[in-house]
Image (cartoon, rainbow, N blue to C red; front, side):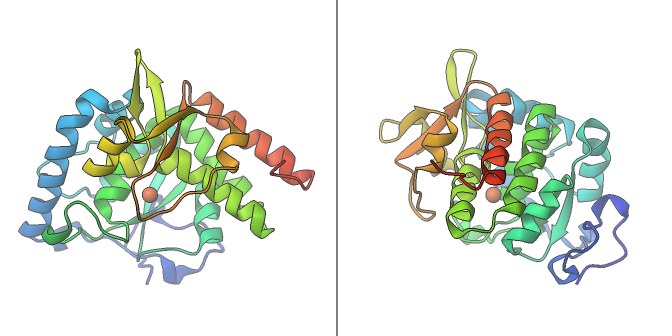
Length: 260
Ligand SMILES: [Fe+2]
């Protein structure tokens, strides 16, 4: 249940189902939680210094990610808010899609606060705070990505036709979750599913993944499966293309034809 102990920065947008939201008590994390966070942080950051996008690396600094402790969302938000107006708000787990997109449209990122068990360091079905805060939130400090994600939320929340909903899910998957970016002469990682996973990241940059140039039509036509390594991913050369793709998706939705 959403708790009023959280301050305005971590409050969910008005009008959303409060049962999805909760509070975070940073003092409740156990030494085991902090240790698991530290293990995950250390092994991902060591690689990401080489393979991570600039937006991730600088964002991780901006929000004050620290290997020694599970992040305190109020601290993260105090650092992030002045940069882009985004905030991470604690949720109880998976959140209904339209509510999730409505949060994004208000620059609020629904964030799981649990730490995965040590026995599931590499993969777990549900997101946890490592996926959500280490994987997603640093990108929210990048002004262009921040605008893109808010726009995405507004457009996705409007989609009603099942085909349009599926198309917007593909756009989210191949950008926010599994996006690649061409930077300083190399393909680098920015999608949260790649930032937070050793195996997915190695696959994305390895010989078994077909890395294609990003285009809205190519992404909307590309199916995906969530529980296996990805055969196809898309590379942008500038986050502005993501923002423009969302604007184009919005135009098409208004005209009643998202996919051509
Ligand atoms: Fe995610």
